[in-house]
Amino acid sequence: MSVESSTSAEIPSNKLTGLKIMFNEFKKDKLAVASVIILLIIFISVFAGALILDQEEVVRVDLFSIYSPPTSEHLLGTDYGGRDILGQLIIGAKNSIIIGFVITVITGVFGFAVGLVSGYFGGMIDNIIMRIIDFIMILPFLMLVIVFITLIPKFNIVTFIMIMSAFLWVSNARLIRAKTLAEKELDYVSASKMLGASNIRIMYREILPNLTSIIIVNLTLSFAGNIGIESGLSFLGFGLPESTPSLGTLIGYSTNPEVLQGMWWIWLPPSLLILIMMLSINFIGQALKRSGDARQRLG
Amino acid sequence: MWKFVVRRILIMIPQLVVLSVLVFILAKVMPGDALSGLVETPGVDSSTIEDMRTNLGINDPVHVQYLNWIKGLSQGDLGTSYIHQRPVLELLEARLWNTVYLSAAILFLTYLIAIPLGITAGRFHDSLVDKLIVGYNYVTYATPLFIFALLMLFVFGFQLQWFPTGGSTDINLEPETFSYYMDKIYHLLLPALSGALLATVGTIQYLRNEIIDTKMKDFIKTAKSKGVPEAKIYSHHILRNSFLPIAAFLGYEITGLITGSIFLESIFSYPGIGQLFLQSISQRDFSVVTALVMVTGVATLIGTLLSDIILSLVDPRIRVE
Image (tube, rainbow over all chains, first blue to last red; front, top):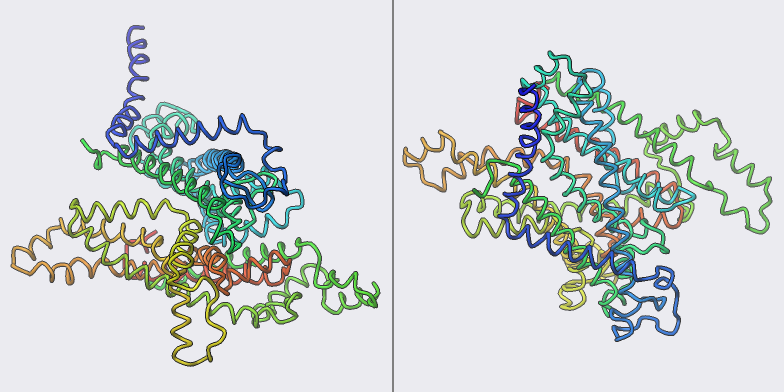
């Protein structure tokens, strides 16, 4: 009885150490800590701003103030429809962040599950899954996404997320498969098997926790990537519908040379916002990567 | 060796088939067909259109249409553009070369920048220069291409006016003259530089890691203690091993270059296949769209095939898998 209680008391603390070390390491990286603070400020002001703002109000056309430069009424001026840029910036950032996040979660959960199964069972299952992944990887991703977006009759945020996720889960699956292949050769897996643990238990309760740091790093980096892809597509005019502004939609106005040349207030702020967000998220991801890897610790 | 090459080519065949089926289904799903634009035209009644449909084979069973389409593809028949009223192949040829030039310029500039930086970072690793290069890598890795290209166009095209802001050449120039070619290169520089500055990440990181790893190895220590000069150690012992894989990675770059060309060509209004793709899709000229998806898909397949084979030549360990 006493043995039981002592082991169960030890397990949670053991489990934590890996992550704890990672976060202790992370705190030593000043650039990464600064990135966290900048990102928090951006997220808080975007979501608080979006709560106060009325989306209907922001996207309403006002013909009396078309292409107005920054004034006290419109802090960042207006676009070709007289719509307030600052308001669109906040709502656009909110949309971009949420969509990037949702895509990251969906592709993460699906990709990791597939990768885990593929790597753990190996053999025929692995072969079939890997052929499918190889095939999706060689497809011209951007072109196909654009084609799908134009083809789908009822195009909205949900379908957009589905289309993107259909392509983006593969890299997650590949990564986790490779790591699972290495992990399943270790003694603790054979020990668990011998003790009669089920495959599901070994996969999700034993292998997966050991991959946590890789998963966190990968999710962080792909979050930044997904925001970039979404705003890139919206920039080209194949992202979110215009009624749901994205940061990319705002930057897309710059395809008109007059806007690019003379109306910096329309495209520069959203460009810089994306740039700052992506840099910060990437710095955080890279710092997590370093702190997860014992060889690269700052000491 | 040959076993690997044959196996690798065999893997490609089902991929090619699935790709063609997928593109064919897409083409069928696309709304409207070659003649739906004529429905509203006065003087053309619906029975005439129906006849034209039958002549074009649109009323054939699906599998017959697929086989005809594949037959056409293998003979270089990519269909007809209904907007331009010209064969897609003709339309593509003019644009394709522009994209090839742009991609070649991007690759050339990428290596021109990445190789010296990668070598410097690896050779003097942990120095200030190395830290600067690693910092440059972090920033370029995180920066989205379309934002960077826009900023480049704004700063160097519009504000400083060092470079032209669009097109692939000046229309007033006589083709085939020296100044015509110089002008083409001049128009290429800014988009190519925008693409290249962000594309250096992979090569710099690879070279840096390779050099740091290799210079700790015993054979380098031996060479050093024999008195081989530092420069010769790098050129003969370290770099010789590191350069081959870089050349082999070329095939994998194709996907990135095509994606990049869509953004770069739309920002710099450069008339290549990326711009053609965007124009065709907004004009619903879907025979061009499907042809482009198919062509780029096949190009990517062949690129990865070549890279895989070259890599297996360079590194025999890959062949085992």
